[in-house]
Length: 399
Image (cartoon, rainbow, N blue to C red; front, top):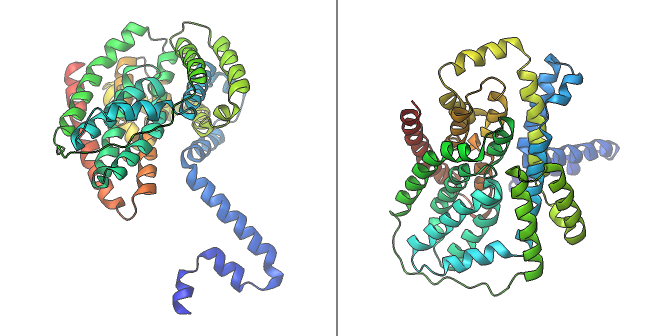
């Protein structure tokens, strides 16, 4: 009985031991526990909404709030996420990834292939979508080939590839998309700013992969083939989404075309969009807009940013994550090259520095039990190592 009592959770104790007349209270506890689990599963949007609510106490809602929201960024992000979701649902990405992995026959080659497709995928799919697509594939390959001991390292390198590889394109991660539109950065200038940190990041990731062993592997095949017609249509829609981001077509036109097409072809792709990310963006638009109207805060960031946007952006990202850091700091500086580089390399470091890192951690703990501590030690060593090298190198480069 004592052992059983020790294993009871709070809900069970309430239901088993409360008198019958307190059943409404037990039901209330059940609702509270469900709400708690939901908040835990959706921590980032919940934190963003709470942060916005706190700043609204100091800056009560008024007509100026309408100027906070970057509708173009939200529209582009929605379209990219929806089309990529549709492509994932037809099974295109796992098939392409496995065909690539089958070219390699060693642990080093397979991991490099998985990390490589995550890096390339993040440039086109956004970093979080690339991880959601390719982390499960990595687990599948490592498990089927008996190489699960390399799961932590593979996931961490894929995380670095997604966070740092996605910096090269405006739609490679959410903060790039926001800053690209906020400052109206020309395409060529964006590429020239981000190419040096991208090349250095790629070299660091490749160098770490070279230390993996060259054990012989047999990689399983995936027989299922995607629907060619739907894949072609979604490919066209993806080109429309890219044209929206690169200002090739009006964003409202692309939004109408993509939403209308997916309503007919695959409504689940729209329903499956990461709405939490969009809510997070909208809430942080409110948060940063209000913060910019609080005079002591304005003065503090003005003083900090005198010393350069890049180090401030990178360090701020370590605490509040790089997406809200980009939105917040953009209210106080015109140094968009420094801010752009800072929030991108700032995605390395702590687990909360990037939303994508939280996805990696969640996927790892889902597949591997009881090794969270080992994962965090390895994650911190690699991620902070990359951050340190990139900060020093880019500080020297941008002088």
